Length: 486
Image 1 (spheres, helix red, strand yellow):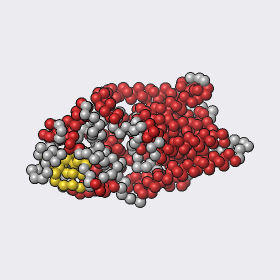
Image 2 (cartoon, rainbow, N blue to C red):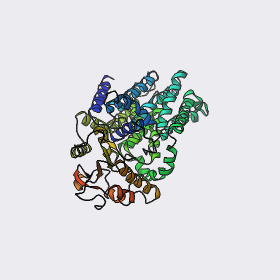
Image 3 (cartoon, rainbow, N blue to C red):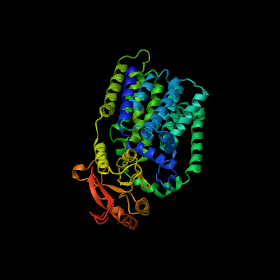
Image 4 (cartoon, rainbow, N blue to C red):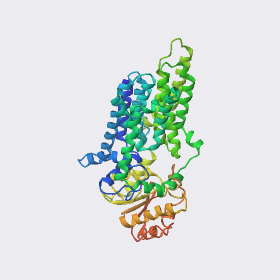
């Protein structure tokens, strides 16, 4: 456990030395804009429930006291994870592998997903899973602890509703095994939906435009980066880690004394795999809780005691679990080592080049960054403290369809630029040698300039520079005109 603690400390140090990932930086900046008076889903268009933005607001408030906003956000996330581990601690006295796996994956090896929604969900759902594992072994924890675990799980489900599939699967298993509705009547089973009910009330009271945004743009967003079922379930080590854990569970469960606990952990991993697949995108971070509980399951299979009289089957189980763990953890360990060593990815180099080309823009400068990749706009906007004039963090709708919803969003980009009069309009336009994963081959200006609002907004802009795979347009008369060049 001491080695895991040192690994977790190294992971935390690496996180503080690295820039926030794009999703976390966006959540933090969106919280700042909301606290500044902008209305979520009206001034700031997003299709996620509001709760993760509200959870990020304490970090913004802390930054007003002189703290770095990103560091305050990291401390906030660490506080949530530590709180959930403390809540689950009395439930894991007989399950050190669960503690070990959580500390390892949540803190030491978060794969650059630190602070993202799924990272928080993995922490918030831990007490619920630990509670289910304890109940499966025949223990009956205190009512207060069960209610607290249910509340935390309810918050996780409010952040992303598909996360409800994992608790549902975990609860359905003992109900089917016992042929009783009793497991659905426990304290955590009503405190979780009660929390969701409160969350819904808060949403309707303080973010009433959310449902309108989902109705208007939800079907279009469903087209964005949509994958096939095969891709979603077998995409890479994120999803394959779950299948490895499930296979080793099936093969080795007969040689495990606390087999019911292992079943709960495996069901949690499978439930979160289903939650990722339901979202239909196949983004790596969607699989973070599934992969995390796969690691926890494999650690349990590696270390769990055997029933009396077992021998060779235990050796086979532990060998398979160790092999699977090595395969699953290769990527996270490499990423963690690179982050700790300060190795820069292509995205960091691109942002440095862009930042240098716009060195004259100080904090508060209005900027528009147009790209389908969220990481192109964030965290550079947060780092440089620029004001993003666009109502949305990235143009995910590019080229999806020629319907009214896409045209409305591109028109919104044009009207945002016209209203904000940015000092620079940054358009992702990589040359052949600069192209990386997620880049489009067509020009964003083709879509922007196809709309009269976009053409009017860009009329006074001409290309001033190209840096890091981005074309930079400034309000000037000389140079290639923005819409003429499309």
